[in-house]
Amino acid sequence: MTDRLTTLAGVSNSVRQPGYDPSEHAAGIVHLGLGAFHKSHQAVYTDDALAASGGDWRIIGVSLRSPDAAQALTPQNGLFTVIARDADTTEARVIGALAAAHCLSTDRDAVLAALADPATRIVSITVTEKGYGIDRATGGVDPAHPAIAADLADPDNPVGVAGLLVWAIRARHAAGAPPLTILCCDNLPENGPMLRSLVLDFARRTAPDMVEHIARDIGFPATMVDRITPAQGVDTLALAERLTRRRDLAAIETETFRQWVIEDDFRSGRPDWAAGGAIFTDDVRPFETMKLRMLNGAHSLIAYAGFLSGHAHVRDAMGDPALVALVRRHLAAAAQTLSPLEGVDFAAYADDLVRRFENPHLAHATHQIAMDGTEKLPQRILAPALEARHRGQPLAPFAFATAAWMRYALGRQDDGTPYDLRDPRQAALADALKGHDTAPKIVQALLKFGALFPDALRTDVAWATALQDRLDTMLRHGMAEAVAAEAGS
Ligand code: CS2
Image (cartoon, rainbow, N blue to C red; front, top):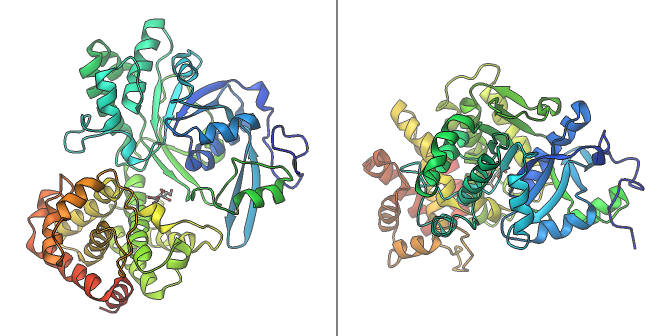
């Protein structure tokens, strides 16, 4: 049997290896959310930064609940393979940036010690949109979120992001450790300011003496992150073994493209991420809005319409010319809601996105992207819909994507086969939808759902009619026909 990847010795020469000796660099970052995306994105940029400019900036990766990542990575001394693929390239590289991997639920002490350690200067985060427990209406904590509720009740034994951060800030302040920079790398609008307001609100409720320190000394840079990275696939490990000649249980596949735009507000230094191509800027918002509305918005359209018309993966959905026409229409409509961004041609960006979605090597499940719709819809689809309405631009593309989500929220295929919605509010959605089986009723029930839809859309008759018409076609004729009808309209 092939040896496990535990050192760089013996890894195939054709595989790129860290351009530095990992053992010579201590950790300076704790990362919460040790998933495939972190491994394909920040860890790769950090690998480039260490090779170019050195520094004690390796990463201690933390999963909040699942021990799987730590169990795969610890026996490999943190080493793992990133396989970047597109239509004509397959490149493997071994990443040395990860100094350790822990799981909070099984290894609390190690995680808390790392957060409190004065050597830690950055805490970065990818826990997905639903991981934070933000009340989007107030910007503060959502006390009903399970981790927020647990941490409000017992702030000394934190289990969630806000609780861990405020715990760390208190411990570090008491010990005179350097101020942290807290780097949100999730696809949320204005993610830095959003996390700042969440942490401040949590501190107000549990550690009021820390509020001023947080407001003054802790940095919360905004970021736009981008690299399409499916969950590890069934073939990933075999491919990694073939390429590296080592058995690597932590290998991941991703695309060759990557992008990172970061607001330069670091309070105690940072790695030279620009060496890996990261762009530092004073204002991330225009990049972030573009990415959320164009890439992520189109992704959600593909996920709902594609999944329900029988396409398991994005690349298969991109084989349906009618759906591709809708994707292109959506991208153009989303671009029209943006303010011009110097140096960026939105039409060229849209063309690149279509190519990226078509990537024949990425098995990116539509069901994966479809999850957590209530967390994703506002910034991806509803914000640009609102902007389009304000500017008097066509609403049809956004209405179709929203109707597709509404259809998806019913939790059953056209033939009645149920599927798991995978949404943090799925019980409430099921409740709201109970007994409603016609398009007008479903649309009315979901328009009123929670604080999901902005008031201007909730009360707009033309918007409701546009949703109803499309949902009605989806219900009567199935999603594949609805896609074809919309593309032909
Ligand atoms: C996707 C994103 O799962 C999803 O919701 O839209 O994870 C997307 O792949 C990344 O944002 C790409 O950078």
